[in-house]
Image: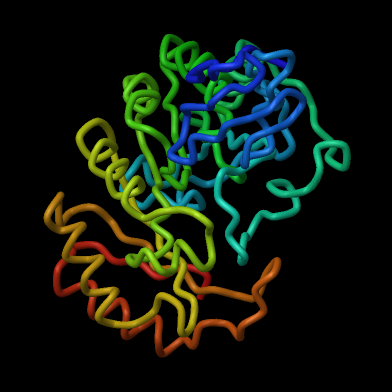
Length: 288
């Protein structure tokens, strides 16, 4: 465990409020927040996943996916457990939402993660990607590791849902070189129904990312949920107002976790790409 950042004691000192993400969980003693990895222990908030790695791979950079950031290179990808959204179609639910006791986790200290990344440089590795689960719920570990990685000349990459408060995000951003941001949909109804979250904080994070580092955006298209062409056009238009050069990855949905709708039709993917390309320079299809 590690003492958590961004929290405050409540009036009776028995409860704490986590201030890392927009949920603002008020957590009683012995309980965890919605992310399942920040726990109130005797009136103090702790991170339960600090340094615990449940998934590790040397991935092609394009798999993050990043299209315009060191193409052809690789990146050491690390993931933990825990997430502050509850997407019914989660693609990595086996490591995100399972109980901690059911997961095989290996402790990797920040300095050891950086040393491993440097050892992999002859294989084309450019740095560390914090991915697979929700890395912003690994906040303390990423902050410590990213600082060391930057000092070592390595790149730091986030693959994230962007559901975080501005203050902690601004503390982390000076150490982040690239982000793939998952905008789940462009309606609040979708976030309510399928993710148990809100759209507005994600859009706010997108603007902060775009002003600080390389940004690419991914939206998984789910039939009848977020693949309406008017919605795709609105998303593309919003991105274009920030920068029409930002790549948009439209990826194909397949049944997973609690959502068992049929896969997104291939024709729907092509139509969505065509609509988005009216406003954006670079629209890519994934999972096809």
